Length: 205
Image 1 (tube, helix red, strand yellow):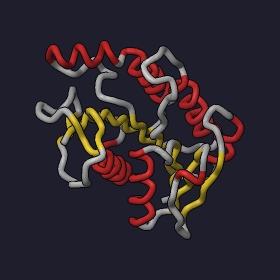
Image 2 (cartoon, rainbow, N blue to C red):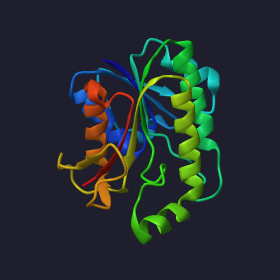
Image 3 (cartoon, helix red, strand yellow):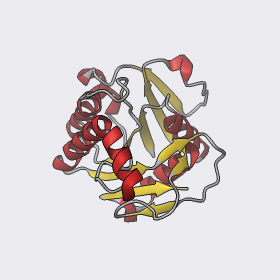
Image 4 (cartoon, rainbow, N blue to C red):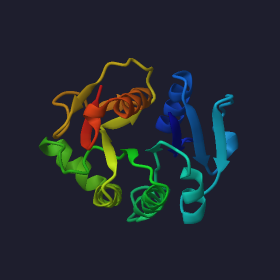
């Protein structure tokens, strides 16, 4: 499969890019700073670009079979539309190039689905980021793409285990964190399995 990864420099994005290459796929990494990727491979194409650049995004998506979005905003907890803006460019580029499949990494909480007092506090604290993600996801759905929305609990950099919990509604009943490497593993699994098409999946270790 010919895959393009937006946000390939991030923790999850790097893990996924390496995994997809290891599995034999052609991968294009669309990144602002190529030197930060620290990956060299004969099947890896690196495009230096900005996801806010609509024309560059459209051009990069041409000829691809699937899009992975691990994009993040640079505004921290402040109110922002960065994720929505970048995702609109990605989705519009997919539509223009007749590319249907996308896996979008959001966050647990975008569906107000984390239970309990701690869940409510977390959702309130992350309100601005979750709103931005939610608007991005709405744009994906409204354009009738074949999507998987990934909703990981708190991310960490512990070792890859390949063992994690999934929830098609809400979040897993146990586990409040997940390793970035495990999220990348799920992205790959979702991309390869039709059962995850048009689903939104909560993840935890």
